[in-house]
Image (cartoon, rainbow, N blue to C red; front, side, top):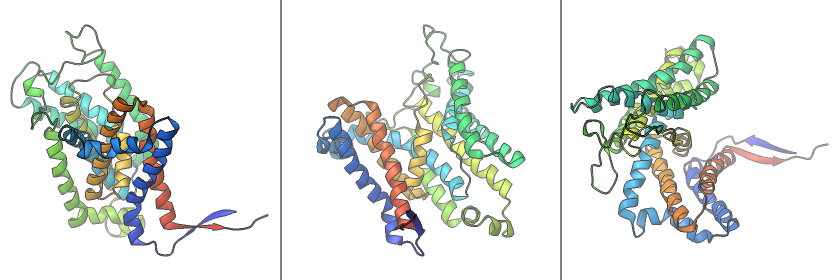
Length: 358
């Protein structure tokens, strides 16, 4: 019989090394995966982790890494507040979608205005869209003690269908030959989120994300709010005696994570995506969960984890183009990262004991 026995005092060094060990294990297992697909595993791993950072076209790839990392980091920062407090928002993908849809709708309502206020209005609307969508599971949690995991997850599918209805109805481009898509924001100066460095793809969302990392670090480590979050997550009863209102904490944490997911959606739809389509959901909301835990729910760790996952995104595109590998194999590779992170984390906190049984 196999059982897990909690370690009395897990090694701090091993806890810190957990993400690194998970990445190494993913590389090894990924090598076997690529080998089974008939590809050179060393070459595939090199294309994923080396070429985007130090390869021949590294300048372009580095910009793309930052572009793909920005929404992952932004969403993961919001999720980390709730996760630390024991509040589980699994529906950031839906909040990401709603932020993009509501923000885009606010901008399209002002078309073809070239006012400097168009983009700020869209940003505020997108942020509020994500926040209000996240407050639905918060309200149900507070009022009826509904499970926020299930509610927030189910709302992702509602958001997706809402997006589909909007791009085939009210937000459809009247000059788009009946395709299910909105007007292009990249061709509308007042509503676009342009490149800040030509040829890099870097936009305002990248800079805002870096600023949010600093703000999140200060809130979590230097502010009473961060102390309340840690207290609520570690000891809910002690948090109540310490003056922390659990219902208020649920609303704040879910609202904050939804707001950042909605903001990320708006920056994405006005920047890299350029328009709303039925394929706008990119899985960032779900991948951000991996980023949050890979970064140990710490802002600096989340920054590094987001960059790492972005490298796998860009590297995945590289090997798809050069080795003709299916996209699903890259998704499996990314899934391995979460699996090994959880597996190593369990081994750090528990011992495996073998016991003879009947």
